[in-house]
Structure formats: structure tokens, C-alpha cells
Image (cartoon, rainbow, N blue to C red; front, side, top):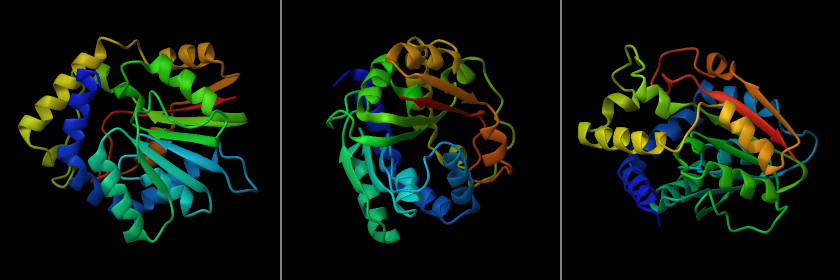
Length: 242
């Protein structure tokens, strides 16, 4: 495994327990319904779908979609995250499969999924173009990739002001040494990246996707309040169709 991926895995291993707790709270919060509405803008209706949640963490998107009757699978590079996702499945009483796997090299047969979803993953991938090519192969004809992300590395490089965050916000609770490691990882990843989401659109078209759309308004719809789930970096949504 590349050194940068080893660092990312170590970092998220240390945050897995707190991350699981927050995602369970988010599942029971109004954010659950908001994310479902956002996903509903792109999900084909009328039938259960085979869904892959890339960089699933502790399984939030997999659970949101499993609760609606879809066949959900989640993968993550961090074993501790996958262990927590499996625990959360039992806590929530939902059926989803979880595997430790590198999102840049998913180990599934081509055309295995109707829908690929991911949230706050693609900014951490040092070979994003390769990942998009691999994800294209995983989709059935007519399938869609829905990617929620932000230009996190550039925001850090430019010194974006997060504003006043509540005391229970994740950024307030992270140990300073761990936060420094996150910032150092982000700056290393920044060297691989171009401005987003424009760069993503280019890479997705090069990967073979026929239609790509960007929604910059998702940020305002999901994060209406500055609460413990608030994301201080404006996110975008990219939908790419095979």
C-alpha cells in the first residue's frame, strides 16, 4: 500500500469510534431525510437497485439506501471503519454487506451495480482518474455514479475560515495532533489535484461517462443549520451516467 494510503488508514482508524457514534445520530436526524432527497434526484425509481457505497466509513449511505429496500454494499480502506459499519448494521437492524477494499481498485465483477454513491471520499484518492475509470466498469449500462465531495485540500491551502462551530462539532473534538495529521495529509494530496469539481468533470468524461452534471446547491439544502453535522466547506454533487 502507498505511504499516503497508509497514513489515511491510520488517521481514520483513530477516528472510527467517534465517527460511528456521530453517523448513528445522523441516521436518526433530519439529515437522513435530506440526504435521501438528494440521492433521489439521481436514483432510478420503481425497483430495488444494487448499490455500492464507496468509502462507506461506518456505512451511512449504505444504511440510508438499505432502509429503502435497495441491496447495499459498502467498501472502505480502513478495517476499523468496516468493523464499525458491521456493528452499526446490527444496531440499526439493517442488512448491508461491508468489505475492506481500496476504492481505487474495487474487487467486483464489471457491470455489478446500478448505482455507485460516495461522500467525502474522492478528495482523498491520489489516483482519482484511475478510480473513475474503475468505477465506470462497475456500473451496468444506464447506471449512475453520485459523488458528494468538496475541494477540501484547496480550501485548507487557501485558509478558508470555518466560522464559529458548535462545541459538539467533530472538528472541535478532534485531538490537535490528529488534526495536524489530517492537515498534513491534505496538503500532500493537494499536490495531485486540480480545481474541483471542474477537474472531476474532465476525468469522468475521459473515463467514459456519457453525461455528467454538477450541482453546487446541495450544500445549502443539506446544511441549513450550523449543528454537529455541519460541513464548513461547501460541497458539490456530481452525477455521472454510463
